[in-house]
Length: 102
Image 1 (tube, rainbow, N blue to C red):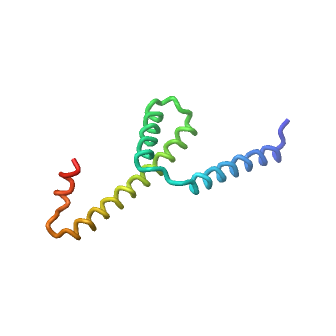
Image 2: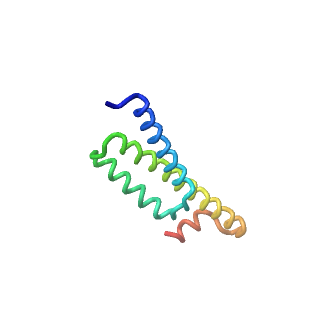
Image 3: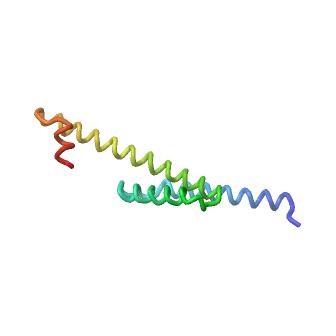
């Protein structure tokens, strides 16, 4: 029979393991924008399949939100860099740059 102390120890170990995993994920090198978007697409596909257990689906969703936020920040930074570069060229406009990129 499992005692309350054993159950409490088990729960604490699981919580600490999750915190350690979370800390390790935060300190790892950030993947490229393209790799992050590819991973986000895979997460969306797994979530849309409806086959994940609730807890796993929540973990996947949480990771996807983090990836989306990092991707959004990366895009905002890139847009800011483009604006700075265009300021250096008085004749250029953001529309000119966008059309050239397409």
